[in-house]
Image 1 (tube, rainbow, N blue to C red):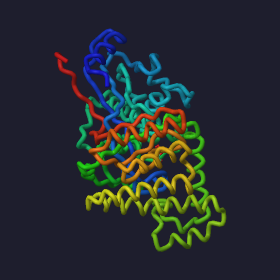
Image 2: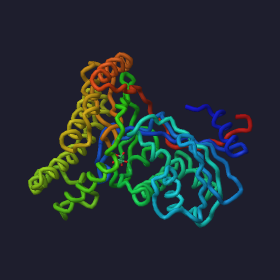
Image 3: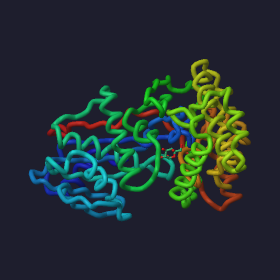
Image 4: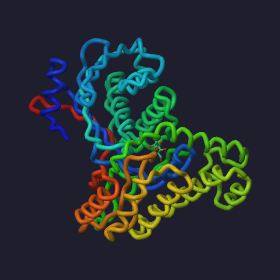
Length: 393
Ligand code: GLA
């Protein structure tokens, strides 16, 4: 991570004055509950230490200027003249946010210098960025910094971020990522009611380890949209049998009947995953409460198999890295995390053997694929947070 001082200096070099605020917005993993947030399911995300970082100040004009270190480019946006649709440029997220926030009407300009240490696909860098921008934009509009404790305002911003992804960027994603990033820590979240419950961090004897396959998530956009469309097709077949909250909310006693009604074998497998995954999250929350780590690990393995075979959002490298992780003898369970089609998997690893696990997985994975994975443990993090920079920092 960049030191605050470096960020300050880089901001000053780009904009010619000292920033007043620093904002950090975490990435996230999802322990379990994959591909069910867009049909009212229960999910278990955890915000992590890898994050997007921003330094910002108000510039006394109505313009918004954003420098992205990753793209080494400055985007200058007039909030009264935002582009009407996405153009494929990195600034789409900023444009989309300004389009849907109230900013276009009020216009108090700011400058942001952005960097990120979210190293891989699947850790929700886009929700992390959107959450950061939404909090800064809210600050610019109202003069208020939304504290971590104001959970209802944060959920409101999460819905705004989701709207930007869905209606502006064009990805039909669910609420899980922005809610996780803005609320922080580890929780179960009902994507139907937006009620959530904080969970205690996992037992000290185990670590959650991220395994980055180094496989780009090439299909993530189109494959993801295709899965959402399949879910809508299932809902169209089952019609009134699907509760208002979405497919994942079908009562367990009715699920077998629903599966029988789905004559298309592909749709049947997709529905099977959704029903089973919803149940697994309930069991996983219970296992966590009882400190039953072996139970949690077994559910993670089942979740991965279902995502690979029934939902078909894994890839050979994600399957391999999960298999190797369990084969190492140091992991209780492993599964892909996020949208899939490449990116990262996570594993529940014996804390005393985190390094031995990483060595085993890396060596075997590299031997079999020629790719060098990045294997590193992660800790829960607070949600997106703004800090006032002192004169001395
Ligand atoms: C992506 C989406 C989320 C969720 C996951 C899969 O991360 O942004 O809304 O659907 O995939 O669980």
